[in-house]
Image 1 (cartoon, rainbow, N blue to C red):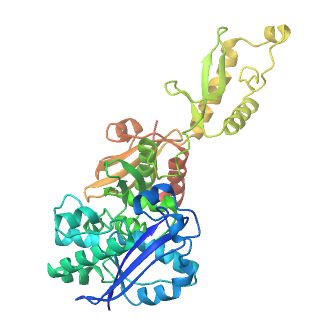
Image 2 (cartoon, helix red, strand yellow; image 1 turned 90 degrees about the horizontal axis):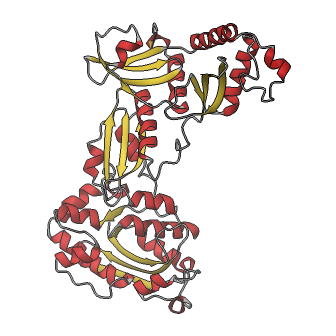
Length: 449
């Protein structure tokens, strides 16, 4: 099988909304060039000025050039039976594959990236961009940023790599199980290979080591790999892949632990490419306070960061429904609970029962509410043999989790809190914990208060 060494010029950075303005293909048999195809292409859209300033290709130059559809059959014949080679191959391949698909052709050629190949053959260089790599290896580039000039330079670079033991690396990279061709340009395959096939949370970092995405997995290696197996041409997807320079992870004992940690990390780090779970935390809470006449009053209000509350809700209506039920069940005063917001008449005000009598009913209502809010722990296997994973729910809310010695007794929440890490509760975490508890009743243990 021969190598088709390709370079293209385009109207922009992603294939789904941009076109190819020039393409150059050198077919190489491993020893010499056996065929060359090169042409300007009419992208059927305007070429931006900054692209023209970079490449020198303007709208007038491509006005009479063939459209991609007119060269598609010839190009497909050249590419599909050969190994597709390019410097940062996924960029060129994504454009060519997308354009061929628009013309009715399905390109399935194997890919080979000379950036990744260069890192293996010439490790430790400061940069592996085409210009810098050729400069380091003293390979001349003529007509830079034109398809023909860059493709010819890639041919020289490829031949230099072959002369320096590159064939062994090429054979390894082209194996079906290698996965080299689908990884982000700046990510080494060894990083993926070292990931455990265990539950956990993974982090994608950019070139400044900032976390740009957080995910959870039952199998870290399989889940991380799945991010890169589709050559999506969408702009956001392409930018996401290009920005991944590093992967880190935290192994977890179970999927539930990973769910909790992922949600917590997303809300703490606010990664650029995470969309879900970025909604605000719980917004409303039930409060109790004593007014200037001595009556304990209940109210639903926006959740205050440093003000103790009795219970919290995601939706205002959820809290109001619960409060109305308490008013009816314990014969509480709707005005004193802000359910009825009309002002007291003087007659109604003087007819109120004494505060101590009314407050006793309030206390019974709050005690009943507390009794309905469960306190329990979920116990599961730890990462190590001698430990167990513990998640604590106190009065209906997730309190925290951590690892306990296997022999540690589960008795009350006070003792557990000394060994567990507190976490911020939210609906997503709480719903997953309750679903797990319902599906695994043997792992749920009630607590004394």
